[in-house]
Image 1: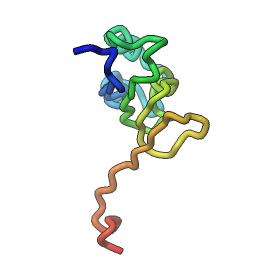
Image 2: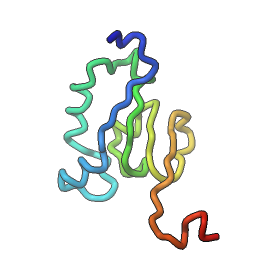
Image 3: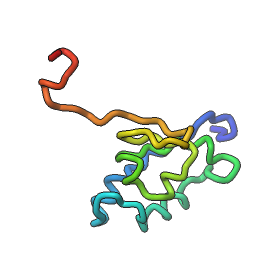
Image 4: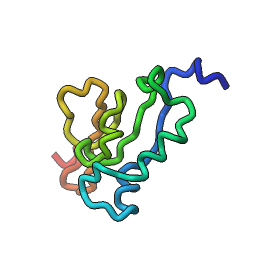
Length: 103
């Protein structure tokens, strides 16, 4: 009830989906709709931006620049050196012969 007590705000914005649905191509770094996202983040500001975890649904280089610049960012793929708040999630591998039990 009190946002001042929150340790973290999770922003489940599917940036990669917005790029695809918006007709953008791979490496959608200049999304127009991303500007609207920040208008709706009620508790986002200079003093709280470090407590907002943005869920990037693509590799960091394919995300809009405003998302890339956030202090806490979760993305797919390789780590971007020099971004201490960047959390990397490995992409899903569906091929049965590449699963751990196959080795």
